[in-house]
Image 1 (spheres, rainbow, N blue to C red):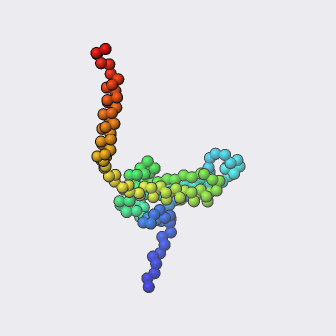
Image 2: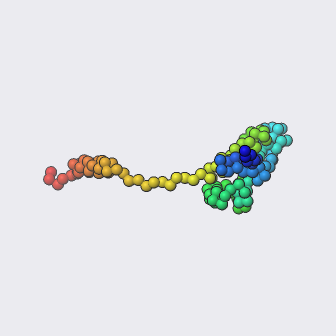
Image 3: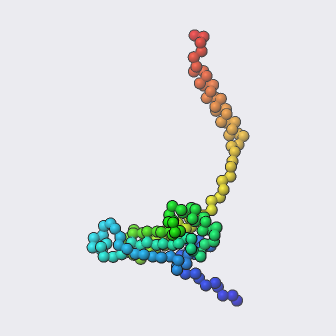
Amino acid sequence: MSLPAPEVQGLRVSAAVTIPASEIEFRASRSSGPGGQHVNTSSTRVELTWNVVRSAALTDDQRARILLKLQSKIDGDGTLRIVVSDTRSQKQNRAIAEERLAATVHHGLLVRKPRKKTKPGRAAVERRISSKKKQGAKKKTRRFSGDE
């Protein structure tokens, strides 16, 4: 009887990728916007950072794919930053930030299927050409002939 592999504590992105909790950094700060006295005293805005370049959770191919697809969201150090201030609760904002990180990384890891080039069928080509000939004949009857 073999023992199950120990669960890696962290953020599950896909079946193959789990970001260890030790690689994710959270920072809380005061949120902007309405909220009165509450917003002036509590740090509910959450900033989540994860360094893609130094992460042990990714293979070299996955890292290259993420760096290419998410280059507009990654800074010069290779850090992906997610900022959330949707709710007035730091706990809820943290959960939302984790979900957004997982969704962003999952999107960055997706490999698109290559497009198969197709040609129109023979019947479609014939329909198109006969339509063009019909249109040309219609315009030809509208032309001025010099006989009149």
